[in-house]
Image (cartoon, rainbow over the protein chains, first blue to last red):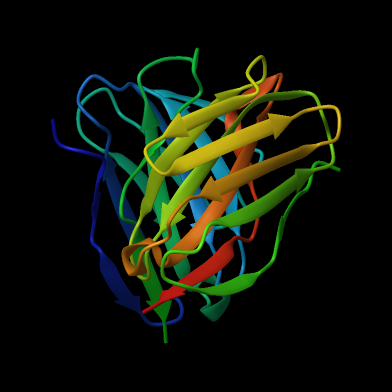
Length: 115
Length: 113
């Protein structure tokens, strides 16, 4: 059973470009979460999605950031007009249902570098 | 404000030593608490999950305890090995926001030969 798959693992963008990060949850999981880890900081919650629905986006920056989890295909975290402060590791996690155990399974992350 | 604090930030021990990592949280209305391991440049590996109704969980050489009343959890690692070297993260989910984890900043552990 494959784990949470994220790609690309590493992404370099220049200021003003767009970054798209993809996440395929574990098989059978329908809930996806995105977290961001800034250099020398802890992981911060960004957004929680189910298929075709955003459940909680309280951690998303108000501008330039968006997330989706379509009926078919991976979840995508999109960052428009990237700035240097967006450089971070972006982690995706999945869970099988509205948590009864609450255990999340994390991918290996996508590391974004903005030049 | 719900905060999670981990002490110490870094720890170096010789191989074979038993050690304890500490995690404290400000809001005791937790849903569960998870301990993760993160290797440099890698993702998070879940080590132990403790539900709010539980006092401890064990897996191999690892034992995690939870004391909700004092807002504390400890991760005990027995007979440490160089392969245990990693950053250990504590994360709490709160009742009502069980889908959202609040992470500590981690303890960077180095086990030396």
